[in-house]
Length: 195
Image (cartoon, rainbow, N blue to C red; front, side, top):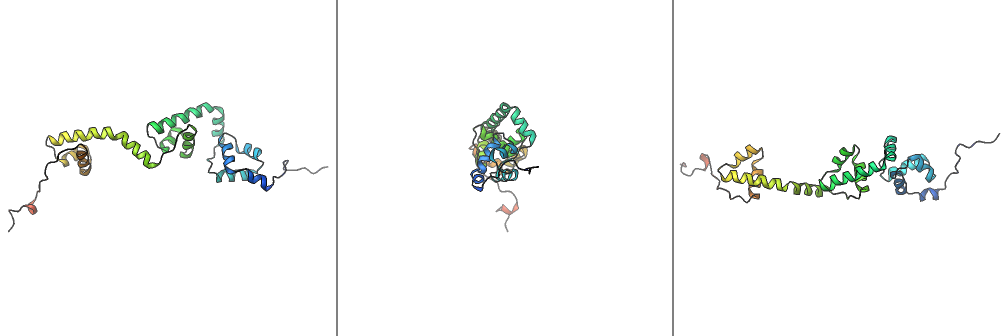
């Protein structure tokens, strides 16, 4: 009776295992390979593959996500294209894309990049959203200006619009409104009542 080997593959040398970089394992995994398939292709142990995928910052999939990805790669591509459109043309954030895709922010980011999109900084997103709201804000500013010039006071406008007084002043200045002089009310400001 012969000795039966538990591991049919010869162990890899440390030089061969070092040649398999975390990034190359990540590329294989993100292209749809399972961890078991990456283990077989690389000759590394299961734990080594998991550690290297983790070191590369890989977002791990569940088995059903892998099956879904393999069953319909066209659906994945359509989703990635849709997410890119939302991101670039409508100013959606990664969090909003994740909600649309039903996945994590990292997975939504990966889909965006797969579709050829470029990830924005937070400041770029804020500027983009501000620019999209600019026409609406200008329309509001002109409406406030007309009501102010018709005799309404800034506090009245603030209360009607549910904005702060400072915001109403800012909108009036944006609409290039000529402001009325401020009136001083109360006995402390009257010069005639001094003793």
